[in-house]
Image (cartoon, rainbow, N blue to C red; front, side, top):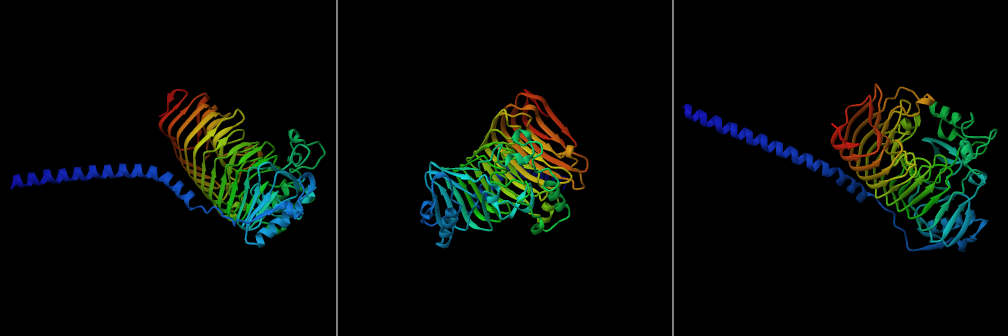
Length: 477
């Protein structure tokens, strides 16, 4: 009997060990699968995005009266060609080789505005051409303002494509001086956006939840328009075109779904010249692009303060790949207008390199913005040179402007891997948290950082999880 009991005990122990071993093996497999699934999710987002298709019908703007002399205002010709294309069920509105001056272009459903190689669309320098005011947005706050240069409101299946150039003609004599900055042409005594009737008035309307229809700006005000803004649109394609000399943000898909930005060049160094700013946007694919900008290359946003909380649409399911970031405040950035939150951002196979690029990956918010960032996945990034840090998370953004409130941000689940940095600037990793907010589960794997003046500066945040990370030759633990 004792022998039988001993045998039973041995068998039970063996089975328990085997079960435990199998469980550990299963857990390890699940962890491996989980890491693989992260990028499978990115692939699925891309596969699920509807890229618009168009009828094989052509509408040449010259057949509607356009003149390629660079001085004739062709606004009516663009308008007529787009209307005819839309009414015929869709197709391509063709801009042939040459220089075409115009006011704002308003796209309609099923229209692909196509710029042939050698074509250049020049936008009017007369602010009055961008009136009447339309429903748009300025720094994360909705308002009635000057029309974006290219605008689509609640349309479906739209595109701007081709090898031509959109030139906003903004410079130190036009649009940029409204920023109030001397280096952008502002002269003392001239009107600018920081005066009480401009941004301060809009900020107060945001705080008071003033209806958007009553936030009337435009004529007599100095808030610059965005360049290309699909507002509340479905199935948007921007492919191969070049944008230059923008008044403000360049590509701004807001409240839009299924957005593809492919092979685009943004070469624009004016004030607030962000390259691409998805806001309240879902299912966005940015690929094969060159960003050389006066502000953030890509900045993912979701509204400022009360407006973001009112709209309450997170930006999510955004994939950035095979892009080249040169000058800018950040390569891929989340914030600072981020009050409705951001989730599921994937960045892979990009090059970020310029003595005028401040950071590679950046998250910025404060206790007026609040918001959350949940799920940022970055892989296979080559960073040549940045000024401040490879990774910067800052929950005190704008502290010198007294941007303090009661909405504490939550930053979690950040994964960076397979990154090489040749010259990191001031810091390898810079994380500035704050009491009452949460920065948790930041994971760095297979990363080599060189040339950092200080390896890390991390305050008010959970410890970073390092795996095979070296900064200035020292392994991080």
